[in-house]
Amino acid sequence: MALPRHLCPTSEFYRKAQLQQTGGGAASGEPNQAELLAAGRVVLANTDRAIFLEKTAFQGAALTIKIQAEDGENDWALFLALFLACLEKLIEARVKQNGPSSFWPEIYLTYRKGVPPMEVRYIQAYITLPRICVFPGDKLQRIIDEARAHFNARNETFQKQSDLFVDAIHCGRVHISNISPFGAGLGYSPLPKYLQNKKAIVNVQNKDERCFGYAVLAWWKGKDVDGQLVNNTRQKTYTEEDFHELGLDRIKYPVEPAEVSALETQLGISINVYCYSDDEGRKMYPYYITHLVGPERGLVSLLYFNNHWAWIRDFSRFAARTRNQGNRKLFWCERCLTCFYLEDKLRLHKQNCCRPDFCEKVVNSEFPTVLL
View 1 (cartoon, one colour):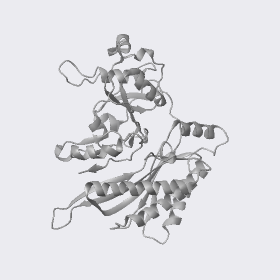
View 2: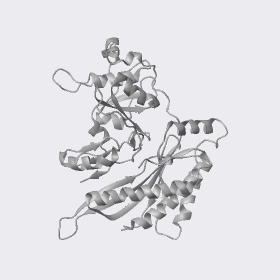
View 3: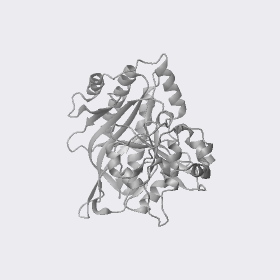
View 4: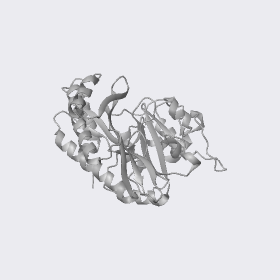
């Protein structure tokens, strides 16, 4: 099933957002956070659940609102109904204040695998939706109905495929930001400290607008004769002959993310593009997932941030939020940033996640889901 249009950000939405922000749209500026919280409290009145502002970024243009569950709550249908009612109020208030906005809803819960006297295992998970793009005049009821259907479908999939049961619901979060079209890749930009410390990204220190080309070349030339990974961030390492070898000298620079799909075919390289939505680089998400099957030259994963491109050298380090306990090997779905301990489980997951009719642009949550 293809994603509904509100769950599928496309260039059409970005053009529409740009028009509304630059002419005749709702006034931009820092949102009135108190009004957003007040809208949520109307829904949660006379319950033991609380709503509060968890964090902000980019001078208030992006924020996260948390809806806390009751202690020991495990009624999925009841919590989902309250969470979506809050989401509807938050969308209504935010779009009225700030115009076109993006919303990433997620529910944090714990699943139980097995029942006594058998071994019982507890698995923490985030059920998330891709970004919901909302503009003034959009019908909120249809948006909420679509969100409900996708939340329920994902919860049912987790339970059926992995024999899981909802043990406890902890909270729901709504990540909110303005809709702003991406610009083109320009000059060098340093990584946030959080991503620097991962040592998973090669960020070439270029002085021109060809950062996309340098990122691809860092991947292409990333192994020495012994097969060891080379982390070379110096621009002078990459020659004009290198650009010519891959056809990168025939590209018009700077490169925008919207151009990646066409460049894949031109270069014969599959390209995945990842971004992050906070100041520290912790809230990463896949922006574009390749549509090529069996490309001539292979697959490269790129990070796009601050109008700059860099190569993701070690995807597992890049995607992981915490240290891998016990150094167990993790199998990652690069499409949705879900990881598994068993390769068979990943293969089963990809039967749905990698379907051709699935949206090419997907957005995940602040933390990855680990399923057994």
